[in-house]
Image (tube, rainbow, N blue to C red):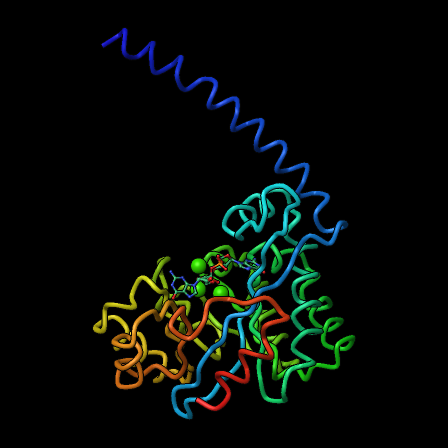
Length: 269
Ligand code: C2E
Ligand code: CA
Ligand code: CA
Ligand code: CA
C-alpha cells in the first residue's frame, strides 16, 4: 500500500545516507592505507597431491584498520578497483609476496592475485620484474592468478600479450575461480595458463571437478581444487584428476610470521 511505501521510504533514506557516508570514510581511509603501511599479506598453503608435500602458498591481502580491525579483501578490493588504487596496491602485493617467499625453503612457490585493471595499466610487467630483481626470488617460484573477468576485457589482446611476457620471464600464470564466469572453455584454450583453479563452489560436485580436471589435464595444465574443507573432499581429489589442493582443511590463511610453523607442520605430510 501507499502508507507502507512511505514508511519504507522513511526507513531506508537514512540508511542510504549512512552508507554513502560510510563509503566516503572508507574511501578516505583506503587512500591513506598504503602510505600508512596498513596492508598485510596472509598466506594459505597449497598441497601437492602427487607427493603429499607442501607446494607453496597463496598470498591474500588484509587491511589492518586501526578502528575496524582486520578487514577482508572482499570489503575493500572492489572499491580499490573502482578508485584505481588497485594498481599501486597490486604493486605492493607482488613486491611484499616476493620478498617474503624469498625467505622460504627453496622450491616453495608464492601465488599472487592480479586484478583486471593491473593488466590494462601497462605497468604489470615492470612491477613483476622489479619485485623479482629486488627480492632475488627465482621467477619460477612466482605464480600470478587471474580471473576470467580480466580476460573478458582483453581489448586488442593486451592481456594475452602480457600473460605471454610473464611466461617468458619464467613466471607461472593460473586461471582463478574457474567455472564462476562464462566462456570459460574458450579462455582455457586461448590463454597460456599453467594452472586452473576450480572454484570452491564445486568442491562438492565431483562430476564438475572431474570434467574440468580432464579438460585442463588434456591441455597440459595443473589443477588446483579450492575450498577443500573436509577429509571426504580431499580423498576424492586425486582420483578426480586434481594435482593440488587448497582449503581450510589444510589451514586457513596465516600471517607471514606463522608461515615457518606451518611449513614445519605440513612439510612432512
Ligand atoms: P580467491 O583468490 O578465490 O582466494 C580464496 C579465498 O577463499 C580466500 O578468501 C580464502 O581465505 C578463502 N578460502 C580458502 N580456503 C577456503 C575454504 O576451505 N573454505 C572457504 N569457505 N573459503 C576458503 P579471502 O582471503 O577473503 O580473499 C577473497 C578474495 O579477495 C580472493 O579470492 C581474491 O579474489 C581477492 N584477493 C585477495 N587478495 C588479493 C590481492 O592481493 N589482490 C587482489 N586483486 N585480489 C585479492
Ligand atoms: Ca586466488
Ligand atoms: Ca579462487
Ligand atoms: Ca574468488
